[in-house]
Image 1 (cartoon, rainbow, N blue to C red):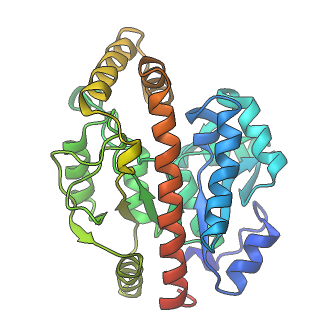
Image 2: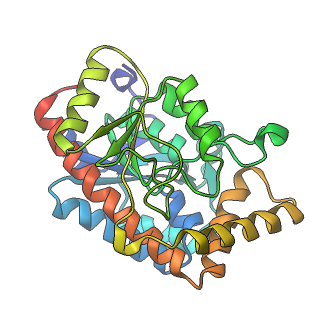
Length: 314
């Protein structure tokens, strides 16, 4: 297991996180791209701190992950969160390919789902809460624009609790890709794949499980069988925070057309699309985004607690 390798030359684990891991207490990883690229200041900093507190209130330890001055960080201080939040999109958005450059040059980096999974596994953290995972972009049959998150899910053994696949993406092709890569997609109390802003879609999940205990048991068995790789745990956005399907569909289609006209693609596309959808919905999508992240944090904490009890030392 990669967690047995000494990463101390590059990785700093926050003392509270290190103590929790050493004593087999539940820890939940959090990404940092949502801070720098996903929300505007000061909503981003406030939300990051609120998500951390939500995990603590649920009985687990949060570990927000990023790169600060070239050091991989599993757990940030409040001042480090503020650095990323205020710098915003000037911070390098880090996926797997970007981590060596940011570390070698001593820069700050905000971690995507893929990079967060990598650093979480280095630190020995098995559960990660985010908003939505990346996937196959619409039009990928021509552009080959496919998020590195999907490859990471195939090989890095971290469970990702999310509100499904970001609805700006091609959900059907993303499901096909995950199936090809052997990544299980579990639905928390749902058989329909959530679509980020909405609770359901035309796609299904692989298996429905109705409790955090059942989710933790699935993870423990998977990894004890030495079946490396991640798991998508799809948790529908709370009903009160879900957006009307037609409103969000119209906003997404408008944002996609504008991105195409401006030739925005690659790592810049998702931040642009999310920000533009927020503008087109009068901020309603941002409010929904915050609520779904908090909802995912609570479920991730519950799963981490059950996993610590079911699989000590896993």
